[in-house]
Length: 348
View 1 (cartoon, rainbow, N blue to C red):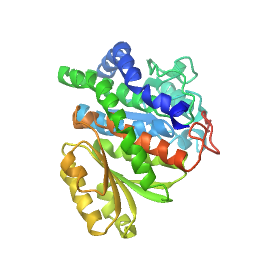
View 2: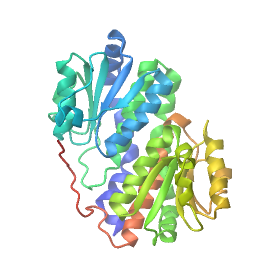
View 3: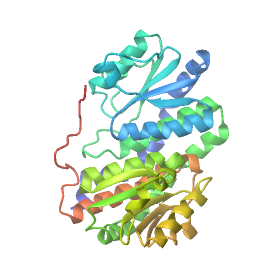
């Protein structure tokens, strides 16, 4: 049963995890921000896999928009297969990992240290080999995550990235906004009844598109991943801009699309996409924080607007987690242990 599942328990734990992290990890954030300034770091190379890779996509927007940094996602095969690593000396090499056990992530940080780069690690396993390679280590403190699909570790990774950004910017306004995140996530949990109803409407879909942009480009990737690994739905993430450059041709009457629409600079863009999808009679579910925008879709999961746009990916993924869980359960799948995948995956 969903109510008794490990996955649901871990989804519900997220506000407490975030509250704890935002208080306990101020020192690592201070240390890393100081080291980045001392070394005049201008770019960041992030190495991660799976859900943590999606957290890295969030970092591209937050550290870019708020801190003026160029942020790239590493290509581990250059280090482990081709053995042709790029130059890293003037970068921060940041590893993000739930378990800290994947050898290819360690290979990138090892090479970064060899080249003299500043290294840092955000992980739920501070005693791991990967953490041992970080000059600074953020302990996500999410506790043992027993369900295979990561939930609380993902939002903890987002919070750690946001905390680093606010500290690096020296912005008390940003830090105050961060303090509101646990409550925003707690209120997003209230969408569960609506998420269960939405899952029932979508129970027969076998494919879907998920559209986000800006800070919530990462949310599109993470929601698509959750739908894939939990409900076995072939789901593709897109930015709203990229969707118009070809994928729109797929949309016909009844085509399932999930649109992520947070209040802020891109809300009008998401409204425009919703209008286009309505013209094509797509089956649209809007996840967002604006009632007028939600009304443009056939279905919606709406959360209160309690944080600014740059922090919206934290509460906005929660309805998606709940939707994915309930859709999997309706199909009779094991929400704690999806087929063919394991909690810790080691790649080389």
